[in-house]
Length: 128
Image 1 (tube, helix red, strand yellow):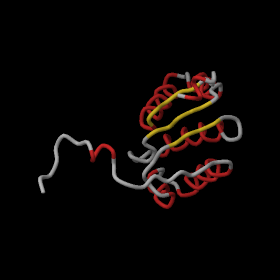
Image 2 (image 1 turned 180 degrees about the vertical axis):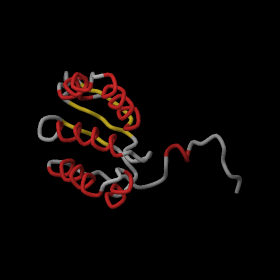
Image 3 (image 1 turned 90 degrees about the vertical axis):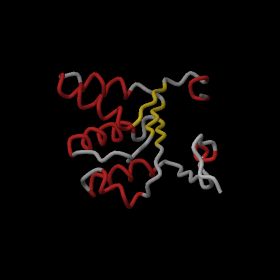
Image 4 (image 1 turned 120 degrees about the vertical axis):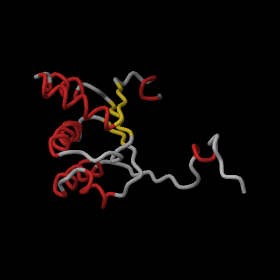
């Protein structure tokens, strides 16, 4: 929210949502326009990184977004998976390694530990 308040052009996607948009744009011939719009952002937020396996084409499209963002914009990604699991998600260990390389080069890794807010406030609870 602070980035928005400071005037940064910001966009939020779940990774699955972005991959669907990229695939649709690729099929419709509007991929370059979508990538240009993403390049114009000051901050791109990608949520739920690695929750859904990504096919080869999706991995390549996502790599383009990460590569285009590298050293040109701020990027926030959220995940609960360690880097060692990314090769299995993106179907290609080398591509996963290249994405990780670009994300961590100027990045900050924040690890949050503790109880899940959602689990703490769940409506369905196990009685103890």
